[in-house]
Image (cartoon, rainbow, N blue to C red; front, side):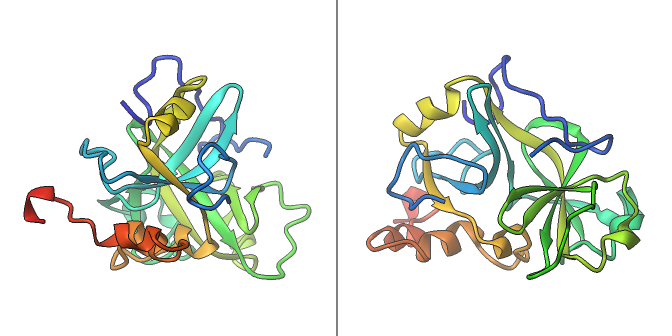
Length: 215
C-alpha cells in the first residue's frame, strides 16, 4: 500500500526536537525530488490516500518522505502549539501529514519573497521558498521572514525503491509544487487545482468523479 506501510520506511529527523539538513511536469514520471507533488491517481481509492496531494521533502537511495497537504484535522493549532498560532495559515488547524508517527508534529513554512534566512538555524531549505521549521524555535524571531506555516501530524514514508514501484504502477502523478500549495485554504480542492494547471489534456482529470459510479 502507498505511503508508509513498508516496515523498512525511513524515519525523518525534523520533528519538534530538530530539523534535518536539507518539479517535474506531470508527464515526467520518475523525476521525483524535494518540491515534487505526488497526486493520487484516479485509480487510487484507498481512503488514506484517495485524492491526496503529497509534498515530497526527501527522495534518495534510503527512501522517500512527504506530507499530505489536503487532509485537515479537527485539532486547532492553538490547542496543540499555541505559540505558533499567529504564524499558521488559515485554517489554523493541524493537518494529517500521513499514517506514520501521527503522535509527532512537523512544520513546513513559506519564506516571504526576498527575505534573507541566512543565519536562522530554525529554518532549513527544502525547495525554493519552502523550508522546514524547528518547532523548538521562538516564533517571534521568524515572523518577519515567514509568509506562513503549516503544521502536520505524521508523514507518508516509502522504503527503498517503494515509491519508484508505485510510480511504475501509475499510483501517483507528478507535478511541481508552488509555494501557495503549502498554505492553500481548506476551501480549495488542491488535487483538482494542481491538475488544472498542468499541460493539456491532464486538466480533464480534475473533473473525474470521486465515486466512479456517479459518472
